[in-house]
Length: 158
Image (cartoon, rainbow, N blue to C red):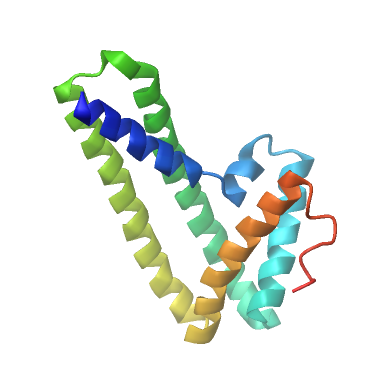
């Protein structure tokens, strides 16, 4: 029973971090997706201070990274939802297997981050790579504010 509660706690905590711009964008791949994509490009380009040459090299690599990250995140979310659906039917063996899978997805996401960190460093100076990571967090916050209705003033106010 303790493992069951621990799994639910882990899933609840992980679920609170699941909202990100890719998740929001994938919900229909319609006009909202395009609007978010355009906003992200403008936001990152401004925050990073990308030159034309840097932008041309950066965006294909970032888009590839984003797609791979989204795929892994979706698989982890699917696993989480599957675990939640199992609810009381989970036993020690299933719990161990689910935890192993969940941790494996976290490791894959870490490995992907490290791989693309090196690729970003090959394209951009360290200062701009650092600004990229900060811009990702800021853009997520911007989108959350938009969802909550507080983003009427735009992201350029900071």
